[in-house]
Length: 512
Ligand code: FRU
View 1 (cartoon, rainbow, N blue to C red):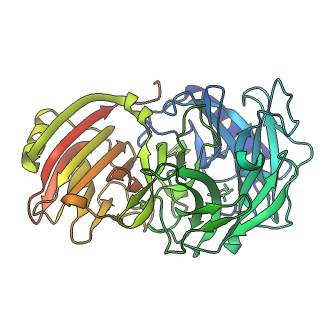
View 2 (view 1 turned 120 degrees about the vertical axis):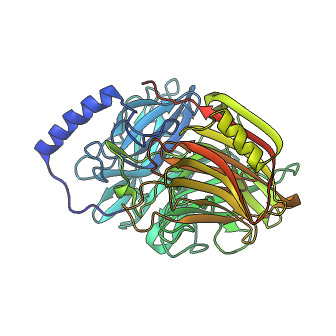
View 3 (view 1 turned 45 degrees about the vertical axis):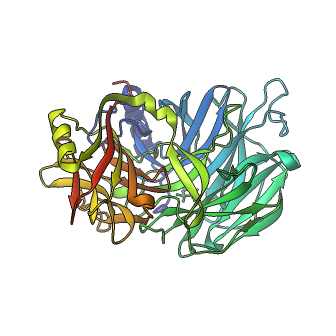
């Protein structure tokens, strides 16, 4: 996070801002240049981390770090949206506001269905949010609760519930741990490059059970941890725990990013299977504060997460107004064995298929023939989903150019010598707002059977690449001209062969 540059006490300016914002909020205009059409972004103002993700009674809740008063970081509060399908979002009023000099920093939410906290009743159990209360010299963990399906929230009168008398102690992720029938919290000690584990029977009284770190990437501070168990695909009953730690700076693409550890959680603390070099969930520049939904509909075994689609390096400079910040697409997580050992895979959730419109499909053709088809069918645009599988053949480099216009394109491809997938946004559009923005972001990836699969989502200001069935993911913001809507395939140094190509035009999620 960026530290606030002095406290903002601007009652009149704030009031005017509030009135302007309220009217913009009502209009819910999602038509501005660069406005994401199938990613979540708020109608107006600044957002960062996703918070409080919980499923309850037919609704997925998404809260987020929000400034109700402006398009830069400040007055941190929890904005709120809900979805029934994880694709379409309904904006709700701000859930938790900064008050009495205490900002509402990141955290999580759970459905306390047994009313263990006694903040609701057995018949009307509460949703409980666990958030960090931030002041200049202290961060503490606090509760807020709702007994009306998250529509209104009250801060708990006994706050804080956890105070280590520390300046940097934040971002609690709480989940129900069935084996011990207790709540577990994993929370960051950012400067120490550690996470701490706590447990509680009632969400109010917490006792520390262990800690983990420093390990992996330690150049930057540790923020927004998550901890969950995943089955190892292809094995009958093997399960592993995954510890997520967001780091800023020092991530793989520079600035902020998300690392993970695979290991065991013995009810008290986490142990990594090995202490390898850092492992990155996403090799792009714009995936931060990735955390998962703490609950899913019954019978849905998936672990689904998303992240803030930006980077602390330049988040406040991206050329968008009257909002700043969006979330990535929701992705389902899996553990699979690869040549490099057990690895975290991400695939876009299947629900996104509902957005698919016109389709162009082709198979077993050359790149030249594929380009001819794309042109004939006018298959291009700024809202696209593309699935392609290539045989490398003699090519040295190949892939797909998206958002192509005069002097603009974003390359999404594979480099054979470097054995890496990449997104090259050096000519993607607007770049000048930050020196570090024009760059190539690559991820090492083997090509078994000399084949590479690329699955790409293109929105007005982003590209998300899921390569080889989610083995590698690259999420990058781009800011092309609206007219840069071309799409074509490329090959260099030899020929690649298109095993299949599917391109869908996608529909927006917002009603205009
Ligand atoms: C991560 C973060 C969190 C903090 C929040 C403040 O991006 O710095 O650690 O709770 O943002 O907005």
